[in-house]
Length: 98
Image (tube, rainbow, N blue to C red; front, side, top):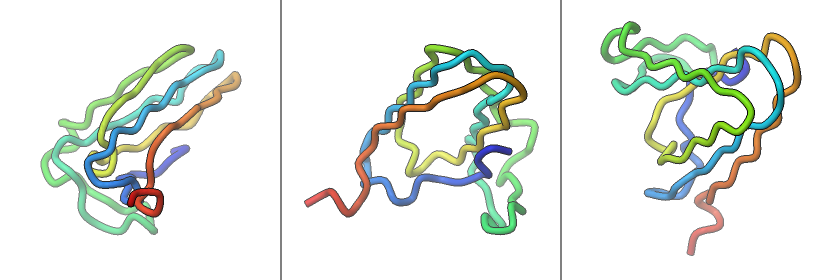
């Protein structure tokens, strides 16, 4: 995995994050677990609170746009298999909020 299972816990509560994917590549799918996860993030040893069959895998390519509240959504990103991918991410972390 390019990004292991995690939530963006440093994002400001109830804030919106925007991620734009650019490049020509294969792989790099984004996975979302609507049931949440439990276990060790540091050891990449998490399991779904529901079923692994419920995990949503989203293929992406040049121009894919993700907008959401990722401080509460468990997600991971698979590795890019070939080509080049660039991601532009806009978010507000807790230290910037007054």
